[in-house]
Image 1 (cartoon, helix red, strand yellow):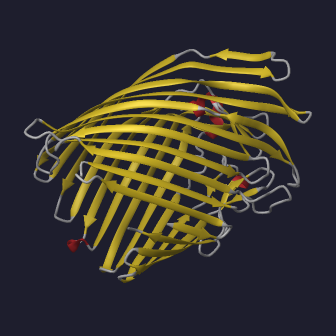
Image 2 (tube, rainbow, N blue to C red):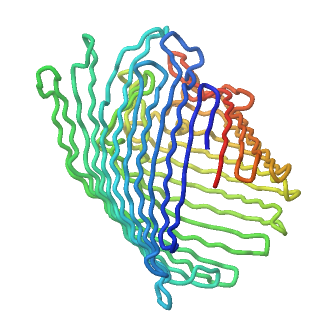
Image 3 (cartoon, one colour):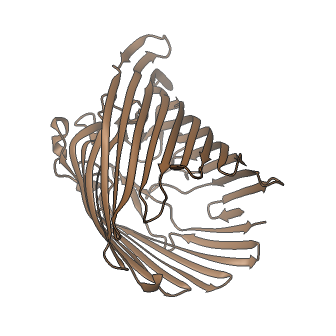
Length: 518
């Protein structure tokens, strides 16, 4: 396939799957590249503002072998890179990733085990990013930091056993185990003075995790199914450090070593599904979850515009307790359907970017004592004729801080930053002819706050975006797609600052994609 579009967007992708003559092996090659000169990111750009360009590419190779009639081996290697501009000449970032994985799976016959699998993988990543401060007239910028290397490596493995047949009349049980090792650092030059960076910071650490999990699904009656599960996680945070030096002399300004930490968490869950009639199903679920802070949250600071966000090596894990009730309706003949779900989640020690009293425009990742997210999901589709499908979804999400804790009491009762209360999506797909299809999509989000303090001056306006595309089959193997993103060129706010700078999502973008298959 090949793609061209506005703002000098251009790209291409190729993939091929090649089976062996005896059908025991299959090889897949794929590669793609995409670039665009980009658009400006702020409402009233100044002399220093430039389009946010992008270049990205990836390549992959996969091999699958049928070892026997019941056993298969799948392996893959992948490489990916991206370089991105962030709206001014100095502010840029780049990422690279390389990964390898293998999966051995089987489906034994005449055995209590109906399926099993073993997976292993390894990843190597790097990231670079530069940040600056822009003056009030947006005519000049001053470098703020240069995160010249953020390397990370990861490796992991998982195994799973499934007992029972996967059908509505049988009980099935799954047992599994997984483990993961992550090692990451941030290497940063900062404190710009005299035309250069005077100091260097290195920080990072290691995370090791292991988990056991089990699920069980059982029909309690012909129309009633119970699903239960539990997961036990053990996480070890080790070798955390932060070291700052004077670049010119090597003098050590700070040399912190953080204590190792071990966490253990049990996360049970349960759900019921009752098929009340041929068209109506009721659902109920209760669940808990656990999330350890990432190495980024613990050790890597970052900056967006004038706002600096600090890392926090003292973060505690997040824990969640939640539940939901739902109804699903399927119209006879599968020509339509409706679903409704109400939910409430209580999150303890939620990790948030908390505004600090001083210095100005500074935030720090901190744990909030308690947050609550409750809401309603509605959705449905209707197919009045086979060639036309209409669908719509609505989400009400009331996400608030119940208690910010001693260090963030000012957040009590406030809405979570950058979470709209209302989101509506709708679409229509029309197969006008065998070789012609139209698709129209719309998304509306209500206003939301840019910051955790819910400053009215930093409220982002409600916005509507409409996308339209046309698919034309020019020949049996040749397809053309014409698409317009943000059809009516709506101005969609993505950020605001105290100085009045408003960040914007991309304007209307027109693109064409030509695909040939063989």
